[in-house]
Amino acid sequence: MDPMEFPILILVSSFVVLFLAAEVGNFLRAKIHPLNEDEREDFGIVLGATLTLLGLLIGFSFSMAINRYDQRKLYEEAEANAIGTEYLRLGLLSGDTSKVRELLKAYLDQRILFYTTRHDGGLAKINADTAMLQNELWSAVQSRKEEPTAVIVLTVTGMNDMLNSQGYTQAAWWNRIPVAAWALMFTIAICCNALIGYGARRTGWRLFVILPAAAAIAFFLIADLDSPRGGAIRVVPQNLLALAHSLPPP
Image (tube, rainbow, N blue to C red):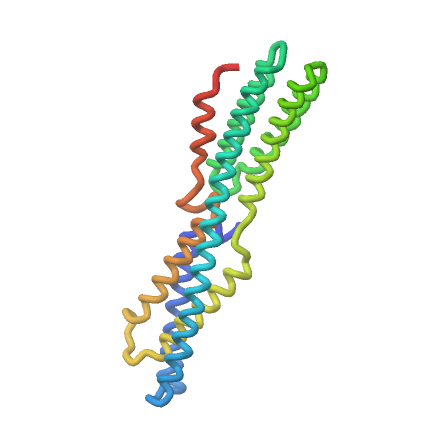
């Protein structure tokens, strides 16, 4: 189970860990080495630099997540265009093409399921059915070798574009923020909260809630955007759904 597929888990766990880090810093200040006024200026520089670094990491990670989300949306649109174009091009073939069009509609249904399935429960069956339909569609086009060259080339090119678009979509869904980037971001956030707890002039849990809550919400948003299946912000296959309702009968 990938914890990044559950952004709410990231929200809760990061808040708890960061809040505890602030409490640990407060404990170290109170029990081991309280800061004196001469040290506070240098400490403020270190704290400011660390918070700046955390802000930059969160900003870069958010930019990476939103770019990946936009990429998944673009590939969904490209898939819908490729499937719709190929469905129309099949009309150029002579004879009865209803079977091929039925296969294409079944393929479209599988692509919609790919986008709407939560987590990875039924994904293996969807991928297997999709691969089977791709082979059948390709075989159906290859069996039309007797068609005029221009027509068969156009149809084969459209089928190739449709199959390629599925591969690009899959690659985009696998493209996630690296674990190393998450680890670095969490580490810097823990250091920031520990430093805030260590440098606090007044104690009290209310003071130590602000930064953990803000950082946890930022991590939640990044994880949500970067989670294609588990997040609340997901790519809705609106173009594929519109295409499914607009295709004429085979």
